[in-house]
Structures are given as C-alpha cells and as structure tokens.
Image (cartoon, rainbow, N blue to C red):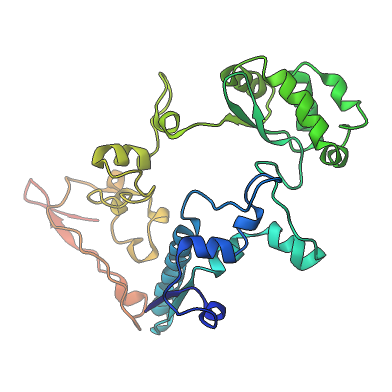
Length: 303
C-alpha cells in the first residue's frame, strides 16, 4: 500500500491529500533559498517535490519488496511532499539546525566555494567550478591572470568568499572578451571544471561529431511527448537479463541460464519464464533445475 500526502505535520494545518508541488516548495524552504540575493523567494521551475516524492516512493517500494522476499511480510510505504524538500535541503537546513544561522539566497553561487558559479561571457553564460586552491590556481592562469593567486583578496577560499563581489567583477571583465565556446576550450585544457549554460534547444541538439544524446532525449524525440525516463526501457529487450554476466544478474537467475558464450549448440526455442518473487519462499525454491534442450541436429545439450 502506498500513502501520499503533505505529511503528518501539515495534516494539522490543511486537509490531507490537498498538497501540490508549489506549496511544498514554499513550506519546505526551497523557495526561501532560491533566487538572487536581492530578489524575492523563487520556486524551482521544475516540479521537484512531485518528482522527488516519486523517487522516494520507488526506493520505499523496492525496499518493501525486498523485505517481503526475505520475511514474507508486507509494508506500508508513506510519501510526503513536505518531507521531500526538507530531505533535499542538505546544507541549507544544516546551517539553521547546527549553527542557527538562516541561509540566504545566493543565486547560482556555491555556498562554500568561490569562484563556483555562473559567469557572463561575450555571448552567454558559463558555469565555472574552481573549488579548491589547486583548481583556482589553474583557473587564474588559464584566464591570463596568475597574479590573482597572490592578491590578498583572492589568495584563499575564505578571502574569495569574503570578496566575492570584487572577484566576480574582475573575472567577468576577462570572460566577456570571448565567447562561451572559446572559454570552455581554454578552461577544459587547464583541467578546470566548467560548462556552458544551455537552453533546451541547445541541450537536446547533437553537435557534429559528438556522441549520441541520452536515451531520455532520443525517446522523447521518438514519441513527441517530452524527455522520457532515463531507465524507462532498460529491460524491455528480449532476454536482456540472460545476456548479462552471471554475476551481474539477479541472485535468483545466477546458475540458471549461463552466458551465451558458454552455451553449446544454438539458442533453445523454449521461452524464458518470468521469475516471480513470492512471499515466504526460500531462495532454493526460486531456482529451476538444469534441463536438456534439443538442438537442431536432434541431440541434446546439457547446460
């Protein structure tokens, strides 16, 4: 059984079952820490609470199925829209719970490292992740200003965090002289984590010579219904589970079907049975005995 609502605490304030994503974002603190420092609280453009609650539900369902396999007992899986953003909050909520300091909105800026944020270029924006002194030294050198590492305002991460406004000004003055593509090549050559800020047209476009896009994008183009789940079709191939290495297959199938490279003769015509995990059954009962299958020459091959 699956129960989904806003959570036990919210039931005291509102009717159960009436929660939706934006209210969870607001009540869970996400909007409070999202947006520019001088702007109002902002919601995430994606339904992160709805999607995240579904992910927690899948994990709970899988754990319950495993528990049923081991003990034969069922479980109740409860999902809370409000607890999802709180569970995702990580260091933002920890700043309040541990230090009693209210976290503030930082835009794209990292809360513990600088420069680790969005920067402006000649034709767009670039994400730069120069977290750590070694990466910062490579970044400053790649931008043509190794003297920044000697500047007392930028010598250490703590000083860069304290003087973030000045750091952004000098970096943007350099980065706006070339395009995003140019700077990505320069920074990647210096082993500095970076990446362009794409719109969706650029995110799904495959540049010439680039590897294929993800399965989610390919499936979304095929169906015309938007990006698909990344794992939506991973097990729909015929016999996909039997073609993997024995150690990579589920425990119930190990030793039942050997890899094709270890089988003699041709592929058997018998269809693979689905292995159903039933309650209160021993592991031995899930195994099937080895059988003889005829090959095309009329003989029998024992696997």
